[in-house]
Length: 418
Image 1 (spheres, rainbow, N blue to C red):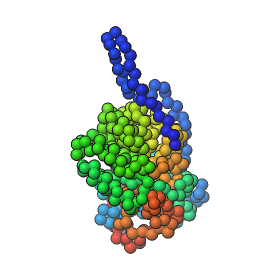
Image 2 (tube, rainbow, N blue to C red):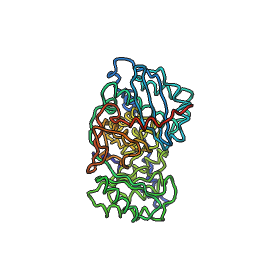
Image 3 (tube, rainbow, N blue to C red):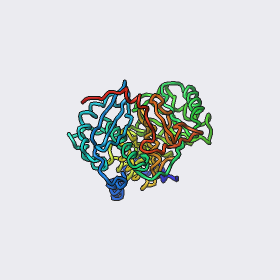
Image 4 (cartoon, helix red, strand yellow):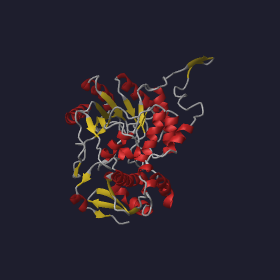
């Protein structure tokens, strides 16, 4: 896909006082009003295929189950249908009281077919909107994935078929590396080992120190960028992620090094909630800028897309509250010619849910995040190995999530009380 980029222009004029250099970022803020009507139409259009369910699917019970630091959500309908999801365990071990006290009481008696309306209603239930961000959206995504699993089993459809058309039954992956605080040479060594397993044709490495923290060892980033390209060659697709490490000037400086070595995207160059500054960096560089993994708001994604503050959108389907909301982001991005490359978070089965989402979006990026599959949860999948085969993973095509979790493992879990 050819990304429509504005060239970075540095203007100068001669005044009586001498040579004056104008602000190189002055074009970052849009000069013309943005027409959001198309994006608003997408936001207000349904995602879940309600027409697949002629009869009501009334939620009878919604439970959170825990075994050690593993969390399952189990939903049952009055007709006996059941769905199960695995939560973002890294977050739910802190956030489970929000699930049990603020969300769980809302759903019994509701029709699961009305999920999109229920999302709007639970947002204001007990003033839950005050919790917007991970605190609200991670527990709510966990509920959504269980409901989609249940609805998929009722309809005999995969989760992807409930929220879209299956565009991508197989997904090419990039090997993600999370190293910071170690010498560049050690990161290269670790990446080589990871690639031996995944055989991915793309990689991602970390820049800077995360959210304005110092880069350690000093100068690591400047040494690592050329070393990654030299080691893996011009045929390898390479992404770089700063996790908001820089201010605008430093982000642009690092971005120009990335351009020199033909890095394929630059993720979160400045802190995630620096919206105008993100656009300033994007407009100053040719390397595509990606972001959105921490974004909790549809309205903010509307601004980021409408103002072309990003080249690539990266909603995290847990952090953003599920696949239905994330699909609206993907569709908004598609309308502006932008790809969607979702972020994966947490432990549990986040990678499985990401696969179902990517399968159904019309505008996926060429490669998607791979950190290895969680083998601590015993399960069976009849339609996929869930492993990377020469850098490609097959999306499960069975009903719902397409997997069956070992009943003996589920039985070890206890119901979490509010």
